[in-house]
Image: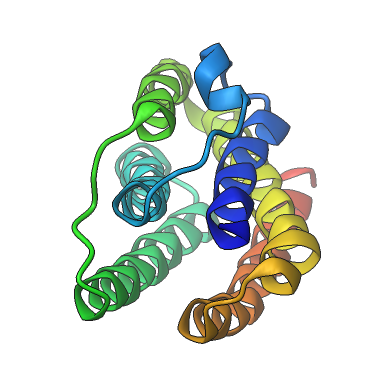
Length: 181
């Protein structure tokens, strides 16, 4: 049960920390999620970041931003494949829940915000969002998820994802810095 609580806290704090949107009270209480709900949260969070990347690929005219977005789409697609493979191995079918519904509702606001921007303002908004996303993910994976995870396969998946998240953050911060010039 510690793993389920940790994943729920991770998912909620990740998106709350980004300030992208608010959650209904039920999601903020970090209610215990079932394995199918956890699978849904993991897949949904990655799908949302892929959607943001697709917007950037379509709207940006900045090569660095486009290349970064392509990396996000590719890497988060790979994480989805790993999560789905682990869920299948464990016999878990993703199930919608208040957290995934809140993520999807919040992503509509963020996508609307991104779609309302053009040029340099778009590039900045997209990259700033990615920096915040990856900072929150790294903090939660290092400080909460890995230490509290008891399932060896899940712990291994989290440990193997951490260097990728750090690489994404460094890449996003580099692009962010270059946009400020």
